Length: 221
Image (tube, rainbow, N blue to C red):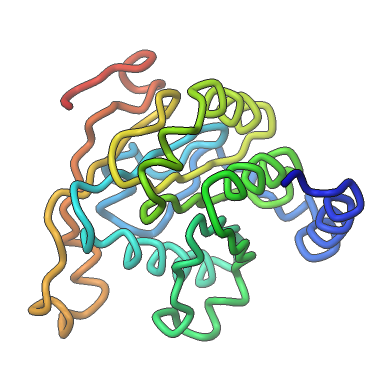
């Protein structure tokens, strides 16, 4: 169901009040503070890009990566939005104070999540948008037209925002870079300090950032 114009206006007003446009980061590259991620992306998330993080199977660490990204965002006194495509975020897994840095958009399906992401990218008030589709059914994801990803790419480029998309497998044709989570987290890792866990997260770059190796260079997969 298409959101009513009044609801869209209300959301835009709320965003403008809570996250004024002047708070947008001016740097071309936004460090995430997560070494495994920043190293592969040439220093961090570049403005105007879509970055896909895909996984091979469940329990690959995508949720932990999201929580760590939120913690770093809060520590840097910045803000981000999470468009939760399956309403799967467990706030209990996040430090309570970090949630103040988060605009959490809870969605029931991929269609709602895409619409919310489109709106947030067009609004332009938050420099980082995370779209989590990692747990959405494959039927929903297959129904997303390829043109949708190119539209989101164009909006991100025009507004100078970074959009991080979590998927259950390679999906986003227009992604400027794609990272693959390779090894699952196990019960043995539960007692590992979070800083060591995030540093050792097994990420593989399978599509090079465009400005580093030309447009759409595929290294593997």
